[in-house]
Image (tube, rainbow, N blue to C red):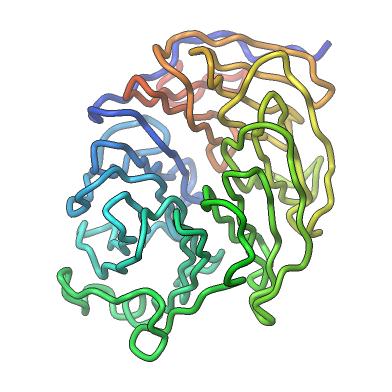
Length: 339
């Protein structure tokens, strides 16, 4: 049996007033410096120091629950999608909204490509639309756009946006992932169908139908690439954690059935372990890829809707219905505030 990291008290990040919908980490900015972005039903996405959980700033402007938020590769920009029918592009240094992109329904998913200065943004909405927006003007010029300017989705003549796979999605979009290949994007819909898309052809490459209610869908990258030299897409559905090769569309690497309904899953590839958050209970569990439960973490007081590993793999974050974010140490040695 693989020894699990020693149990430690998690760091609790307060500040949000409603359930946490989504957490994401930046890449490493400098040695042991990275950031965490949270999306919450209180309408106010927040950016924090990823190591300590200390609050840095709040992005103000949404008028509805924020369902998903992500940072650019260099942490310079953030994108958010919300129930106010908008997606927003933010400057993370000034907190300024660079542009608001109007949609026809709730925006449940947002994504940026793995480039330093993103040229495009993807969104997924409740009306089953996967859309691509040209944001090169705003990301290149920083704060050149007025925060009150709006671009109307679907009008490519004015905003450079276009829809991928019109009429193909059979359910509301829940997540969008830009993989390591700039030309491939992954969509996950509430009917538990995962689709891989070729952006050059704007056509589907392949798809997979999972069993059970869909939870999170995230890209997991090895901190050192020493064991699994490939990025992995982790997906929670029903009681099962699915792991797909991010470089090979539709290729299932592994799936692990658990005894419990899970809402979220995140993989630490180097350790060959993954973390799940319960959808019917308040627990966080750690498993190995053989399906053996290694740890049971208690502390949340509601379902754990989101979880993600830091870019160095030494901690993971969980976000819950109880409105709190917790950071859990995932290494044997002293690290950060865990001395």
